[in-house]
Every structure is written in C-alpha cells, then in structure tokens.
Length: 269
Image 1 (cartoon, rainbow, N blue to C red):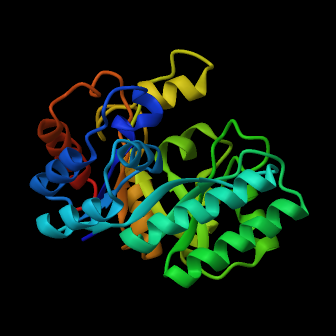
Image 2: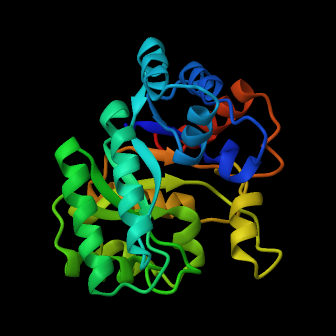
Image 3: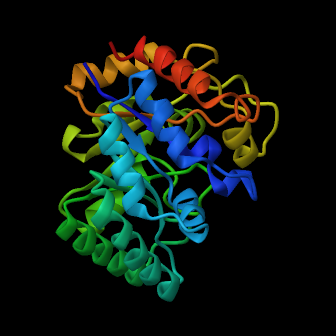
C-alpha cells in the first residue's frame, strides 16, 4: 500500500498572501485524517519564522502527532546564480531540522552549464543531509516542461539521488504521452503528486492549476490508468496529495484533510 503525504500548498503563504497558513493546524489535521507524511512548503515556513516561529517547533509537532516530513517544496534553480545559491543554503538549514526525503525543485529558466552546475551543487548540499532532489516539471516553463526534458537535464547533471517528480496535473497538461510515463525508469521516478481537475476553462494554466483542482475522482484525469501503469512498473513509493483549489481553500482544515485522504486512498489502497 502506498503511503500518502499531505502537501501544504493549498494554504501556502505563496497563495494566501497575508492570511495565516496555520502550518501547525495543518500538521494536526493531516495526522488526524490518517496521513503518515507531511510536505510543508517553504513559503509558509518562511512566514512562520517571520512571525517568531521556530522550524524546530514544526518538527516537534510532527513527531508528537506521529507523522514526518517527506517533501520540502520549493527550491528554484535557475540562471540567477546568486539567488539560487542563497536559496540552496537557506533551505538546507530548514532541511537539517525537518529531515525530508526529497527537496522539490523547479527550473524556471533555460538550463545552461551554470544552471547545471548549481543543480549539482544542490545535489551535493542536500545529499549530505540525506535528501534527494525531485525535479517537478511544469508545462509552461521554458525548458523543463515534461518528462523527456526533465530526464535530459538529469542525464546532463548526473546527480545521485535526483529524479523526476510526476504530478498528475502536469502530466495531463504537458506534452507527455503514456509511452513517456511507461518508459520512465522506476529509479528515475522520485515520487508522485496526485490530484484531479475538471476540463480547462482557459489557456491560463497557472491560474487553472492553482485555483481549480478537485479531489481525485471528481475531474477528467485518467487516474485509474495512471495508477495502474505505475503499479505495474513496481512503484510503491510515497504519493503526495496536492489539491489546489480556491473552492476548498477556506474549508476547515480537518474536513479538507479528511476529504483529500479519503479520495486519494481509493486510488492507492
């Protein structure tokens, strides 16, 4: 049975602005719903710290309720070398406390030799902590926008412990084919982010992905086929549940976490 991770991005400070993401409340709600893993996003962690919170307090709360950090979103690796290197060091300080299995990262620029060098630097820094790199491709990015382009970057970088993060949203709306997913070696698949979505209403993919996702089984994604293909490949890793939706963003935390867990568990029994 695949373990499920609760991803905090639906109430991330990245989306909410001045509203409190309530990371401690999200940890409690995730544990109460049955999740064994948690993915605290770094935007909300940064806000938590600005308001006087300690990263150690997040780790202590997770330990108290019986869950632990699986993923740490999000590191940006791009052609702004100074910012990239600063973010690597900042997130490394958080990772040393939370001990995630993976650092989720995006690459939102063209990938030249300097970007590859900084990606290797991230691999070295987080590898020493015991965390792998999970590259999440996004269909609107200039280069790292599908499974094939992500694998190409991984091949160029040659980083031990780095792999592809496949999100059902981005898989469905990128140029990926089922053959691309089938040909992705299990050893190059870091983990899965899981969600569903109705038919697109616009060409604005960023707004669609942040505001209109739905619970698994309530949209148009071919989730049964997706899950079957991965199980037949031998995937038994952790599945991160990332439902981003303006409609659910104001729900009580426990009710939201329970709906996410129940709807996702049907696909990952």
